[in-house]
Image 1 (cartoon, rainbow, N blue to C red):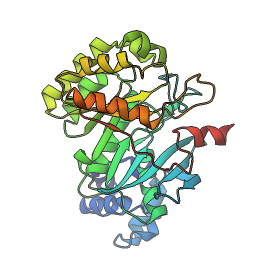
Image 2: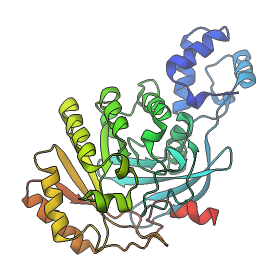
Image 3: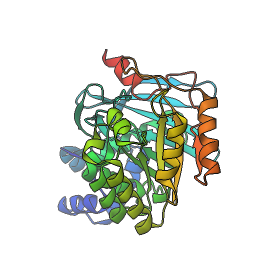
Length: 340
């Protein structure tokens, strides 16, 4: 059966017309989907006969909440969502001054093999469908009773390793008939898949791009991120400079600080040299410790020192704000805990 949450407005229209209904019914259905409705009986402006036809050919599926952790300090909620095939992914709902944001997953598992990341511990299972990505947002809105206006695709998985489904999701969630979330309110994070960056600059020049860097030499970066062996720093940063030139938009470089590995004074100097003159911003992240990784975190004071050095070199930098400190802060921990 066709999952309506996987369909764009145009695809929904083709479906509706194929079922013998006028095209405007597609807009009505798409609006109901964007409101999080799961039952055709709730679509009150559709004819009963048509609802019966829809129920024979279509379904409204996605994810269900398996567990949720709620912060009493800042309103952060961390979700473990179960997919229809039994796999699980995580999402995090966050409150900011500019509005609510969700960090959602693009894959069940991950095959990138980053040494410090819990999400890829058990490898890749599969990519999520557009509807499964959309459902994470819809379920969080239903649970909190609050509208979400910003999206970060930075949860479980590598988004560019599931490019087609990611693209379909972005277009669905941006559609004015549905959720109508602006492209500039969406950020997609990659570990550095260069072909994906190049394609993304053409397809979605208004969507924000974040690139996980985490190392200032090929040796350091490759020890933490196997992707660096295929796309070393000079190749990656060349693609990033081309991206900023083509789109006119800055890149956010995610830099996870690991004690004794990439947090030294020489790393500060190398990083400022690598990024000199680039339209970018550095997001410094004290490592969330993962058991068995062999890596340790740094203090907030150390992160602030790193930030101040970059700022003096003319490179905008921030230390990631700690959200949900009283729940399970590290990405992947809730999912892994449930599967142990």
